[in-house]
Image (cartoon, rainbow, N blue to C red; front, side):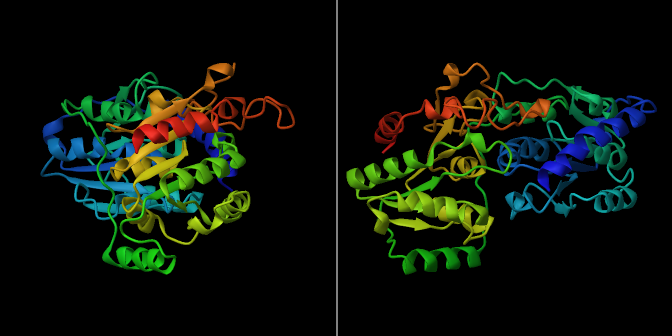
Length: 379
């Protein structure tokens, strides 16, 4: 379903952007007239987290303006309890839901900021919802914006999102990500879950996230290496391993645990807690190890020492943001790396054949010893 949605957006959305763009006229943005702002961020959990400093920058500049967020069920919880936004609006990834939002919010906002790097639907929504619109300068979608920002893929995405704020005259930078919020009920549920599994307050708990979103599964480090790594971390530090992931990754995690010797010190939380409960769970951990995916950015936001494993994507763009966090990238042995270029709509599976020895070449180039060396430095 996700892949189909993206396919429709790529082709039909591009046509609609070109048609609307033929009638669009770029208009100057008068910052003194901005009383309400819509920020559109519809998709990835990780990218939404990386956009939070830009939203903080907007709040600093427009302290008296209303700032609403348009999100989907996939990423809306990233904004839970966020005091920098006034309202979290919700749209489904269906034509009816998008049209309904456009009809009910036509030119409602003085300014719409499209924080999606590639989606066409976000540009279309922004075009209708905002009297003035800001977005990135590439693709047919850019014809719908009044102010266009070059997407700089040589810097971290935090800075690239901040560029959308800087074009409005906002001088702002960020050394770290804002912490993610959770409820008292989330705390109660997770604490009970930890207690039930015999995990105590002073235990050395390591969160491991071996999965990745449905697009570009080739980002995943080989599962047998996760098993070897976890066994070694348990042996060296008497650690307890908490595996995180979606409900679809429960079996994947069970497969890793089955390969391990120290099974009794591993706990499969995949699919058993909500996203906001994961926000809290990670704060109870001493270290995080995982692939280039949403949980890695959650850990960085929560101030946990974070080690991210990279191959198809570049850590200079999407590494765990913040002092003390580490990215392991050994994709220089692959002629295609980086094959993931989000701003170009390129999020493929590995470009080598699945049945070849080169499949996931860049991720296989990261050894267990490579990861262990970084873990020892971090603990």
